[in-house]
Length: 143
Image (tube, rainbow, N blue to C red; front, side):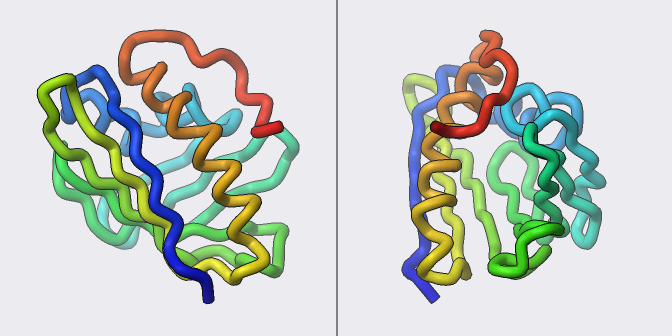
C-alpha cells in the first residue's frame, strides 16, 4: 500500500456550505460525476456515476456536521480498487478566508495513486467553485 494522498484547498465559503456539497447527492453531482446517490449516515451508501460510465462506490463511515466526512471508496468495475477498499477523509478547517478543505485518501495500491492524485487535483477545485456559488461546468474528468 502507498502513503496516503493528501490534498488541500482553501474554499471561500463557510464550512456548513462546503459540508452540504459533501453530503447532498444533487450538490455532490455538481462538482463530481454525472449523478450521485448518497445516504449520509454511518453505514449509508456512497455512490457516484462518473461521466464515462464507471461507478465509485463505498459507504459513509463518519459524519461530523460542518467538520468532517469519512467514506470508503472503490470502483464497481475496476478490480484494482474494489468498492470500499480505500478510505477518503475530508476535514473542514475554519480559516479566515473561508474553509480549508483537507482531503486524505488512504489504502490505495501503489499503482493506483497517480490516477487518484490526478482525480483529486481535478475535483477539489471543482468542489471549491461549486461551494463558492460558481458553476464548475459539466464534469469532463481530468486530462
